[in-house]
Image 1: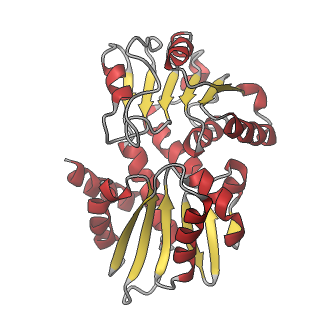
Image 2: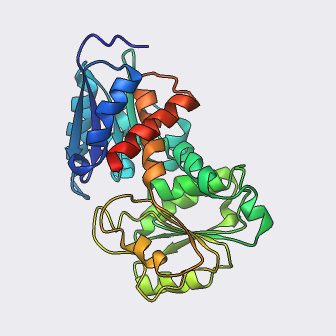
Length: 308
């Protein structure tokens, strides 16, 4: 474990980082983990900022010896694209997904990692029944194909306890991002399982949702409902019978989640456990910790106390 006598800095690069619950959660986690004095640094960046802005932020984190690392949301893909040459190393998931969600240091090496495959998997394993896709004809509709959306597809097409869906539809407004997704799924040899759809019309999203078999999983990975208002669906949407609905957000207007709540018979999950798993995984990486299951649950309890 690292020296905890000197003050260190841990950052969060997001759109509304300064408003996140982690600002209240992290001090409690630091105490549980015995991290000593750590300054938490939320960095708010609007979507679509210039590449130089990312380089300025990453350069400050890299060059400051007291800065241990950072978690990145929303900006994961564009940050790596702008700053790839600034890393001494990026992990295989970062190379595959074209994103970084964790910035960390080991000695004099500055490392970018993509943690979403791990954290999405942990979250889904908690609410998807074992063998769900093997036992049903259920499919997956993921609205949003950014870092989180593609990571979810990569996890589901691996070997999770819930089995592998026969079809995953990734929907994104940007066609260039879908081309990056196509490269990743082809590299994994699962391109035949993934349909990539360029669309920004919520009425077409409604149609794709209504056409899903019973028990299918519908995910909001767009950021709508948190970073920007609204939902990728209209209020006329019909979710699949006995469907599972996952809203990756846990704060904001959560319109997508409320649309699902109006239809009976659905299993609905918000993004809280995804938030907890995502943050605990990055904290462990940045501070070079081995967090066991018991400690992870204690961290979850501390986070829940803040949420309540």
